[in-house]
Length: 144
Image (cartoon, rainbow, N blue to C red):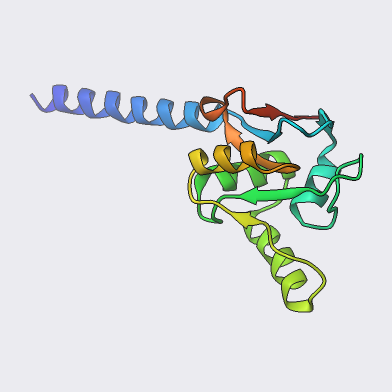
């Protein structure tokens, strides 16, 4: 009986590990309003936009940046995987701009569903979503 319990426990642990690994493998995609003409951004440009240093799209349209809370797992994955920075580094950059009066922090949303709605309804908007939240009201921007 003890051996069966150990096997079940080991199997459950393996399943839990596999499911969390699978969840982490799903990419967080860069997503914009459908009216944005840009279809591809470099990592450096994307990082500059999310650090609020670049405020316009290449065509001159204002960028409206939307982010989830610093402690949201999707925000953390986006910052680390796509921007190659930690969430606290972004927050420090935003705080510096706000406190110095040289810029603004991005717009915060609480959920990915809210993110999708704000991206779809705000011209020039840029944010990020997991694939399951995509629909035809937003477009994916590829990163090279």
